[in-house]
Image 1: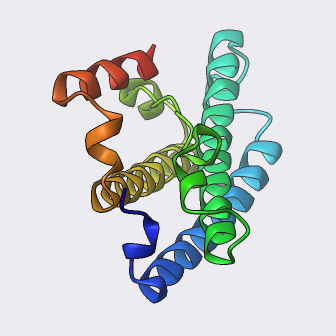
Image 2: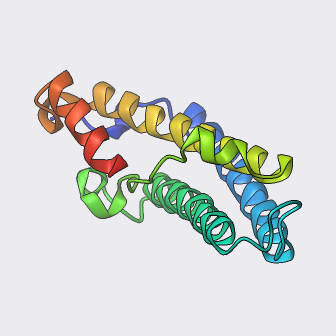
Length: 159
């Protein structure tokens, strides 16, 4: 079995460091915004809207924590703290995160929408990186039974 050692170490390190910085900055922005945003611009008194807003803030936080945990695992691998074989362990892989309904996000203030969209975009980039690494290391063929299985996994993650 080929392993992550086939990746260019310098490129891998720069990718991980850049994504880590971006994720940490976004996590700080999200924390500042959602902690300080107890009321919405309009409709803040509607209990269902406030619950939806709180759920979306949790989704953003969850996405970012999954990203940060994965990036920290990559850093640990770079430093030799975990081995190549450990990277296939589910605990070192990118956790699943629920996507936000675009229609619901469209009803939130601009800053909330921007954070939601940015966290989803960053999560998607990290997921593509993990998928690319899996293909490069030969894990991609073992881990999935094909496009139908991938679609099933995506649908399962959405519900």
